[in-house]
Amino acid sequence: LSSKIESAVQSLKGQSKITDVNIAETVREIRRALLDADVNLEVARQFTDDIKERVMGSDVLTAVNPGQQFTKIVYDEMVKMLGEERADLAVANTPPTVILIAGLQGSGKTTFVGKLARYLKKENNRNPILAAADVYRPAAIDQLKTLASEIDVPVYSINQKDPVRVAKEAVSMAKSLALDTVIIDTAGRLHVDEKMMEEVAEIKKAVNPDEILFVVDAMTGQDAVNTAKAFNDTINFDGVVLTKMDGDTRGGAALSIRSVVQKPIKFMSTGEKLDALSPFYPDRLAQRILGMGDVVSLVEKAQKEFDEDQAQKLQKKIKSDKFDLVDFYDQIQKIKKMGNITDLVGMIPGADKAMKDQDLDEDSFKPIEAIIDSMTPEERHDPSLLNGSRRRRIAKGSGTSVREINELMKQFEQMKKMMKTMTKMNKVGRAMEGLK
Ligand code: GDP
Ligand code: MG
Image (cartoon, rainbow, N blue to C red; front, side, top):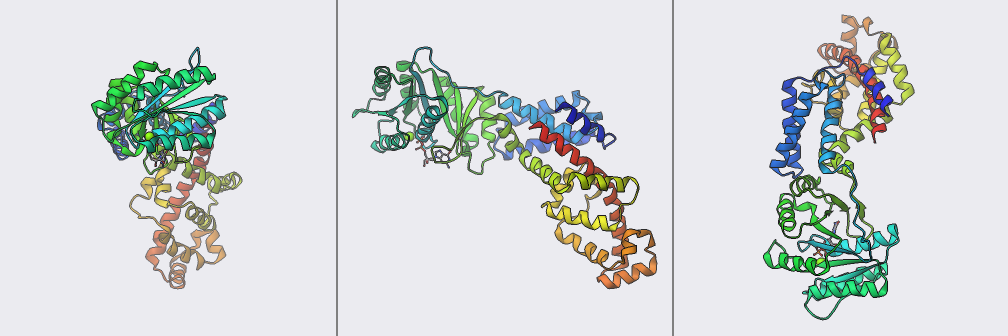
C-alpha cells in the first residue's frame, strides 16, 4: 500500500500548491458541507479548526499533491472522530448478557431489538430472549412478538403495566431456560421527558445491564444530539445505534452525537427488514458525510474509462508531443461518458483553474465535435496545418466561426496539459483503491 502511495506521490511531483488562501476557503467549504450533513455547529467548528491546524502544521503546503493530501487529512480526522475501531457489545462473564434498549418513540427500538436478536443468533450463535418492557401499548408487545416469531426467538411479556418487573423476570427466565442473552425493549415517548427517563433508569437499576444501547433516528438531524445528551445524562449508555440510515440523510448526526456524548456508535440500521442491520464502520460513514463516496466513485469511474494501456499510450503521445485532434476527440468522448463534467474537471488538480470560466456540459462539446468532423485526416493529425483559409473552410463546413476554431485550438492546448494531469490521476485512482 505505502509503495502505491509513494509511486502516486512520485508521479504527481510538481503540481500546483495549496496556499493559505485556499486553505481558508477549503476549510470554509468543509464546514458548510458538515452543516449540510446535519453536523452540529459547535462540532463542525471544532472539527474544521482541528483540520486547519493539522494542515498548517503539516507539509501539505509544499506537498506534491496537496488536494489529495488535504482530503486525506479531513477523512482521517473524521474517521478518528467517529471512533477508529469497531466497538463490540459487552458479554457477561456469567450469562445471561443483558442488553437494554432505550430511545424515543419511533426511533426504531423495537425493530432494532428484532434485528439485534437475529444478528446475535446468526453471527454469534447466541440464544436470545426478548423482554417486552414497553407495556403501555398492546400493539407494541404484538409488534415485538411478530418480529420474534420471524426469527424464532422467545418473548417474555406479562399482563401488567410494570416494565421493571418484565425486565427482571425476563432475566430470571433466561437463567432458567439457559438462554445466554436478554434484550429489553422499552417504551419511548415522542420527546424527552422525565417519566420516560425515570422508567429506563429504574429498569437499569433493577437488572444492571451489561450493555445499554441508545437508539436514534439519524433523520432527526440536530435534535438527535440533544436527545442523545439527555439519555446519556440519565442512563450513561454504552453505545449508539443509528437507524434509518437508508434515508437521504448523510449521517452528520452521528458525528455530532459521537463528539458530544463520547460514546461509540455500534450499529447502523438501513431499512425496515430484519436483516437491514450492520455493525458500524466509521470509514464508510466518514465517506458518506464528506460526500467522498462521490469523489471516490468519480475517481473509480475515471480509472475505468482510462484503461491503463491506453493511458500509457496516451502519455507517450503527450510526452513526444504527438497528442493530436483525433486523441482530443477520443478524450472528449471519454469525459462525456464519465457523467458530470464540471465535477470531474474540478477534481483534476490544475484543470479546475484552466476550465474555471467555462460552464461545461455535454453540449459545450458539440461545436468542438462538429469542427473536428469537418477537418481532413491530415489536419486532425497535424493541427499546425490549420492556416487561415483552412480555418475558414472548416468554419463553413461545421457551421461555426473562425473565432470558435481559434478558441478550440486554444482549448486543445489546454486539454493537452489536462491530459498530462489525467494520466497521472489514473495512478492516484489506483493508490486510492489500495487505501480501501
Ligand atoms: P420504536 O417506537 O422506537 O420501537 O420504533 P419502531 O421499531 O416501532 O420503528 C418505528 C418505525 O420506523 C417503524 O415503522 C419501523 O419499520 C421503522 N424503522 C425502524 N428502523 C428503520 C430503518 O432503519 N429504516 C427505515 N426506513 N425504517 C425503520
Ligand atoms: Mg417500540
